[in-house]
Image (tube, rainbow, N blue to C red; front, side):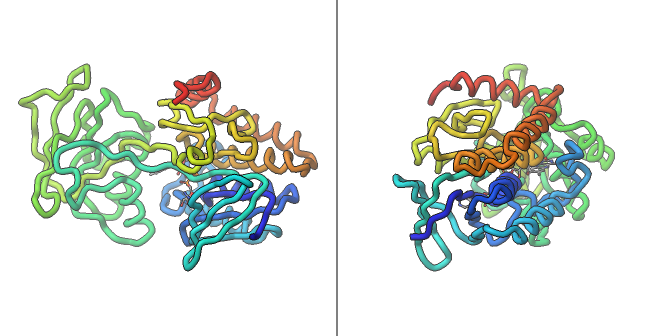
Length: 362
Ligand SMILES: Cc1cc2nc3c(=O)[nH]c(=O)nc-3n(C[C@H](O)[C@H](O)[C@H](O)COP(=O)(O)OP(=O)(O)OC[C@H]3O[C@@H](n4cnc5c(N)ncnc54)[C@H](O)[C@@H]3O)c2cc1C
């Protein structure tokens, strides 16, 4: 069985940054990614990023993915395994891998799980009809494969993802019938909301979808109003003609591998659901396992990159690769604190505070 000092699982912004940081310290690193490409979510993000200049604000996600990917390919000491899914983490620090044509094992002194997040589904009538998509799937179809998901979309969710994907749909020549948002106000940045409104798309706050209409595929949606307690108000139903209902209703951290490895998990709504307990070094309750990016709490690519750097440096340090490491860690921690300062970071700060106290311990 092959062995390595550090195995990084997931090649999104967090995993790529963790890999570069650990390999830069001189550790031998394996980067394992189930897709055939590097970049995770970034490969479908054709818009210019918001956030901090130090974390590439103003650059398109797809360009950031290319830059990080190239740096990983050029860095010595990295065993890159694409189209390989990690199935489990077992005793003796062994990862089980599903490669394209065989199962394999890899022994790693430390593992960094940077597995990202999955999209949340919404419960409503006929939500299994063809034409009901997650926003990530719509982005993949449009921005990776160049395929229009449909002709007229009803978007559910007015957070940044719902607003950005709506705008990208308009750019691709798809009509957006409306954006429906259950909360009484828009959750995303108002600059994104203003863009879609200027294009004539109504944003209906305090509304949700009741059901999809259509036997073989979506032909329309029925929406209705919610009262202050978020209860649907009978009699307020409205039909919206559309062939796609796109759900941008949030993400949940992908923590299965860490559940399975025995890391202590906590339920923290502000971080997106169940996340592994972790300290400031991103080390979990399992001393050989670190976490980074959306898997540690749903946030943004900017934070994912800095978290990856911290986890990579800390894991390398734990194996004796400690050249200038305190200085680098200090700098990364300051960057992360700056990203989370101010009103937009309030939710994450609250979530991390709750996590430090153990969440609800489930
Ligand atoms: C529409 C949209 C717009 C966004 N806009 C911005 C923005 O402007 N600015 C910003 O900062 N952020 C933005 N984000 C958020 C950003 O994309 C994510 O926060 C970021 O990609 C998280 O990085 P990550 O590395 O944690 O996870 P991901 O990018 O999700 O990467 C996780 C990787 O792990 C792999 N993986 C998972 N499980 C396994 C396994 N078992 N074995 C092997 N590989 C595995 C996956 O295939 C994936 O490649 C946006 C997100 C969306 C959806």
